[in-house]
Image (cartoon, rainbow, N blue to C red; front, side, top):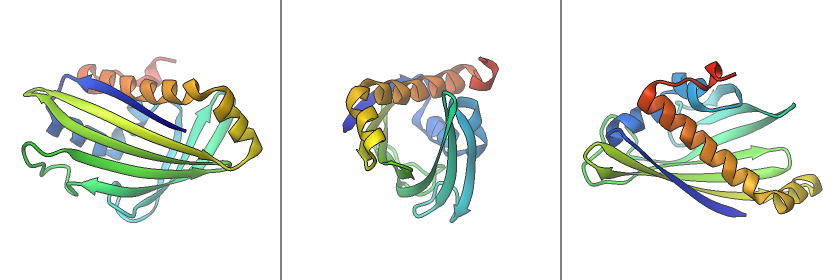
Length: 162
């Protein structure tokens, strides 16, 4: 199953990339995040692995995230007119997920964030969930992006929303 979602953020791309790259900000906008724990490598660098635990309703989902692409490698040195690529794979019980994020300048102070996700399910339960509720995965991805936008533009923290 594949999906693409996008959002415009009213901040320069350089600032958006810096906010996304800082692991200290993850709990402020990544709704449902219980834990994002480095296992190996440098956070955000290609090859880095992290243990990720997310709350989904009453259930906790644990997986391993691996950074597969980061261009440019340094979030503080982004050449003008370039596209920022940030790709990762997440493996959890019953599923594999690849996320390919692209950040481009939509204007001098506006960033377009396009996120492509691909899901593969290897358990009967997850195949059923993917088949019956494909919109739920798209909705969750868009919610994360909207939460990031509110955090980046207005300083809103999802933990304060209850």
